[in-house]
Length: 318
Ligand SMILES: [Zn+2]
Ligand SMILES: [Zn+2]
Image 1 (tube, rainbow, N blue to C red):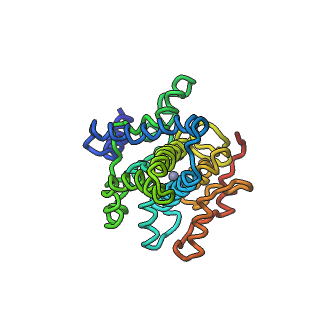
Image 2: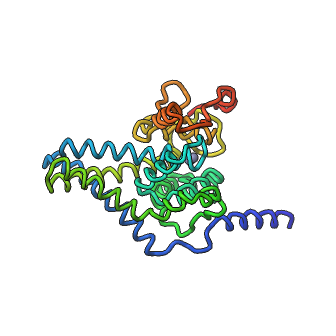
Image 3: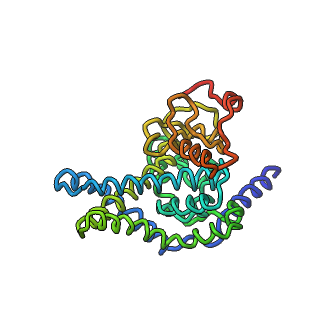
């Protein structure tokens, strides 16, 4: 009798953090199309490049530039700036980061930030939107959980409450406008590389191969690298710092994820602008923030604090 009211209050709180309206079927079909079709292109990429040689230098160049801009839009923008406030940004930079992150096609900025704040609040507990440990810890449950954390959770009908998790972003007119313009930005992310490819090579074939490589393949690569932080970095890797969840540091994803795979430190010290804080832990996003700071576009950067980190260092690693 004494415990029941406490549990009731806890679940009432979690319930209040979910939007009353569940996500609709149409929304979930769109999610499937805009994530699934680029993934098919990613699967077809290797035979196409090797067998038919349909990969020109302009495709590689446009693809690399769009990969870098959109991945950094997520890591520096959506994640370190908007979700965690690791640094303040001047207005044009704040807008550019919201636009660049939207081009990664991982959902509108306020949705992304709300989900990620809920992830930190409940990491690897029941109300975490994407924990790989959701179904249990035996190999079968964990296999299912890895798929859930990587991709399945996008089709969950429970949507995170934006009022509860992102009142700061809802109060920002520019950010709300970019959030609403998401469908147009999805179109830009698919079509702009094709336009550039066509103009650079002055050919329809150049436009088509750029659409394939720099749009479809690039979008799917950014998707799966970001999603690996939710799946792989909460299951495998090294525990360098003390955390209450299963977040781990994964070295082999560091370059592609622009430093986000130092995810164990990130959960130990979420507002820190640098995630790769130990010697040899390359963190390209931190270098980008450092560059913004030099130009005075970023301020109040929360760089690592040696004393704080020493306190959080894990005694037993692995
Ligand atoms: Zn995490
Ligand atoms: Zn985070």
